[in-house]
Length: 249
Image (cartoon, rainbow, N blue to C red; front, side, top):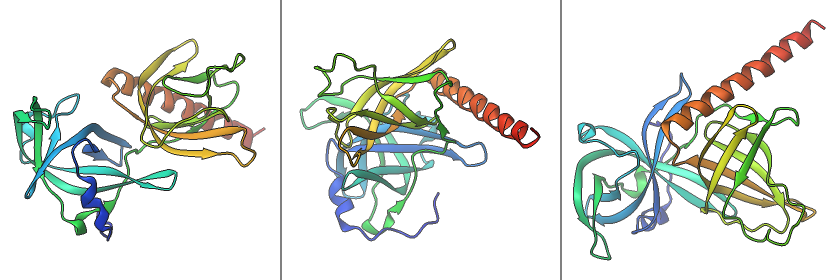
């Protein structure tokens, strides 16, 4: 877990209310640049136990007692800053009662204290800048304000990694930090990966003609994650080879 200095932000405890989105970081491998992040939400907080919705894919009972990291996205203006704390899985409950009295699977984890939070990261991937001849594009669903644009060809992909992307949209587009947008990242002639893109940042260009979105990829199948990792590695390798060739030209 991180050795960073704890964040002295008392309002973080107030974020742990039912319905708040939480990211469960089960594994980080800095050497291989891999991270296992799963989306959840707060179901309840009782004394020193925080109850989270079971993730997809689910956390298994064999992981009870294991340490991991739980993270929130702290909103700062038009950007989101990931902050987390070192937690431990205490139990897996099959019938936790929600506010609407429904019984749902839940993770019981150790609750944080205000001084436990530290700045963290939800991605650990090399970011690729997109060239026109790269044959990579992204499709997004759920965007508002684009219905009247007859010549809109879709978002312009600026860069991407196995964990997220930056896109440029027409100035009429509307999006909010924290919004979930289903995405499909298409590699022309090869295949695609899809899932949900959580809006991490929203920025309008100075001329007001475009909107820049930062997306964090989540809710992806293992097959899509592995495929995206391979495609990123292939593109990075090709780019580095071109750089080496240019040195001797």
